[in-house]
Length: 441
RNA sequence: CGGGGCGUAGCGCAGCCUGGUAGCGCACCUGUUUUGGGAACAGGGGGUCGCAAGUUCGAAUCUUGCCGCCCCGACCA
Image 1: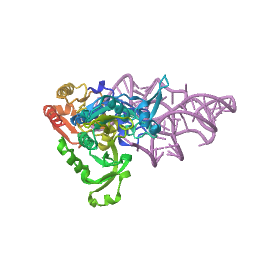
Image 2 (image 1 turned 30 degrees about the vertical axis):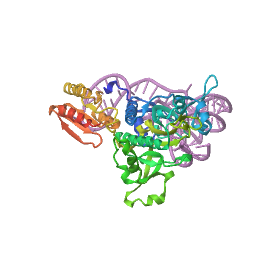
Image 3 (image 1 turned 90 degrees about the vertical axis):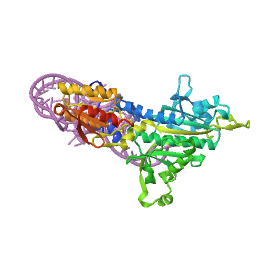
Image 4 (image 1 turned 120 degrees about the horizontal axis):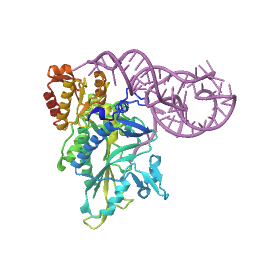
């Protein structure tokens, strides 16, 4: 993409209502524009990142056998009345009335709808297990939206639902999603720690929140330090699921509402970590909480009807855009992980109009594009300083700096955004360098 | 929902107390000189001062009501 043709409304000054880094940078880098409290327009740059995150979430869901579908944003109140949640959910649910005075709502989640759908099609234990998911916009009328897209009212969420014959089978489904979440966050360049979460009236140990550590997190967290740097497990066979889960949950990790100071004290002092975290995922086994009131049952091998055991698994896709920036930025702007960067590399032409510079840039642009790097070419007729500041702000992992001065020596400058390291190399070497850097992404 | 604050040009703000021609910086447009880490000068465009009543000869400024937004807290399957 040529910058001169892109829609990238950057702000030099920080809007006064942005108080945390991710919100400031998302506004300044022209990623989003607030339309009203907690509701955002996704501008082209922000939209690109959102789609990249969505795709990684999707791929990791598919890898564990989850099947994608799409449910509507507007739901009938009927399903919610059947489960009793229409009254229980409270004012966070946006209620709508249509022209025929029918009660509708903008979905804050989809358990009720998918349980209704599932029961109409599935009758036999032979149809289980199933794991369905969708990535869809949700609306929760938060009392106090804040921190930009981190706590919006309208937000994009991946929600998956598992259907099993009994609690034991459900546990395996839960482990699979647990592993998928570790791999998803790993690919996003995040260190997300699973922590025991409140299971409410269901009980048991099967609910975990995944949190990334950040000073601006809304939750207070306590955990064993070794959990933070534990690498993602990668593909895990069914036989190894349980062991993997147990290994990841053996060490102490809890948010403040589940915190047990006495247990935490047993963690060696030099391994105790108390910090703040951003919740980016939450997985939950809830048995027959919905299948029982909705009579979502299957017939077992013994001929008896039995309630389906369910779980749900959420990832805040739009929140992750902010979360990743919270975890990866510096004083000059965003530092994108390679997996989600809106463009693979930036090309800075220091002297637009200079034939050698124009030709060299056009050539680099063509070669990087052909290699699938998707470069952003700053071909605007601005001064160097402005271009450098701009490219640092939007945070592409690599910058290629091309000017007449370097070209006389036959070199271009390659800057790595994360480290600030600059190296001169020939244009050919620069292209090869960038391509090799993206080899494993 | 409790407490606090703010709405004046796209963004950041001053002016309001003490009513009388709506300002500054950045951004934007034109020109000249510049051009390797957010250039300088000159000229220019852009605002029913959140909305509505009221007081007044006269309201951005005073009064009342409403709307919107932000911050702290509580809340957040």
